[in-house]
Amino acid sequence: MQSHAHGPLTALVADVTRLFGTRLEAVVAYGRDRRGGQHSLVLVSSLTVDDLQALALAAAGWRDAGIATPLVLPRDEFARSLDAFPLEYGEIIQTHTVLVGTDPFEGMQVALEDIRRAVEVRLSSHLVHLRENFIEGGGRLKAVEALVRAAAPEFASLLRRVAQLDAQSPADDRALAAWAHARLGLDVRTLGDILALASDDAAPVEGVRLYPEYLAVATRLRQLVDQWSVAP
Image (cartoon, rainbow, N blue to C red; front, side, top):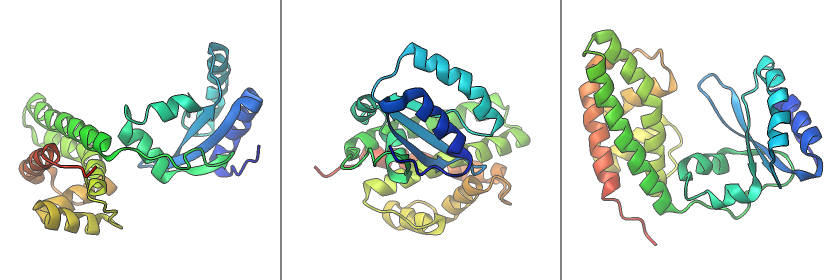
């Protein structure tokens, strides 16, 4: 099995290759966290408790090397779970780079209705979070500021998923805000501020000022997704 691993994930690839041998089907890198770290998915033909114990022993070395714990799954389980985790697994399919093996997602696609339903659920949860944490923080300025800054990345991710429902892939935050304003009627200034915070938590945006508009935009977006009709 050919490996194209490089950079910080090289050690992880070497470990899982040694541990699984011929049962290793593919290793892919995907996405990045806000600190620039990359995630990985390991697909295998079978996964036992002994495998988990071996992976647990290797995990300390990964942590020392700054490598995040990989998602390890039987390949057929991943394929059968697309409807259960359409956003999470869809993100992997969209952003992955193959490190070991051939592309495991060739011809694999997440259903748009599954994405719509998951976005609606996550937006509903997002609204609960925005309201509940405001109350829990007693409306204090620092608490509201922290709430808005912490919540922005999730909203940005969900807004990009709504664009996907519209068969759009905006190139950057400015284009995403412009699309949401033109297509959904959402306030472009509020969107710009939320997206700025999502990409840079030190952006000079006042979260306290933004909160009421943020809440209004998130509420409207959830309503729109609830009414969204996905073409068959």
